[in-house]
Length: 238
Image (cartoon, rainbow, N blue to C red; front, side, top):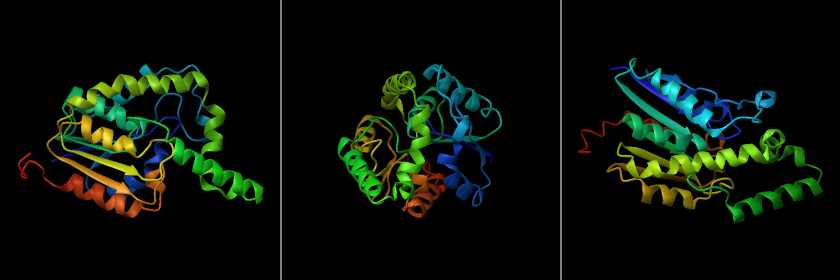
């Protein structure tokens, strides 16, 4: 049985966001992975969101999936942040076999955690060690290219995909970092309430922020994802 896995990164991101997980799974399964870069996105200087619309991101993810449909017996989707919302939309439209939502942006921006993160950056700046702050290093380049216009497109993308959560019926795994300042931990509760799938698994990573594939709990995350993908949920009575 040939299995294809479509992995979709998040807003302002690139395949790098989920690369550690993809490498882990590729080394332990015979799955084939497709990890497209959404229009306007990319790492470093490749990131240029100006003039790009959310419909392009939806279309790019959908085209990547369509190119996989006739090649595999089963198709799984792993979506990170905004990519999780795109994954939910595709899972409904094309009856995908399994869906994994990583820090999925059903809701966005945790005010309390963001305040803590900013306070940490201020303290590091005062001590002259801001460049050593991992969160600051990851997002300072992104913010140079995240125009106000494109942020509105991100919001539109979430609003477009959110209604599809109520029609997801395939096995779903929801993963959330408890210290996520971009997507509040309550988003995972929202996803669990909205998604009617009979088989739902939830994993809360206690020490992880938004980029969970690069976080302190990544080994726990990787093992849980592998177990979810390699379990035959049909035999469990789904």
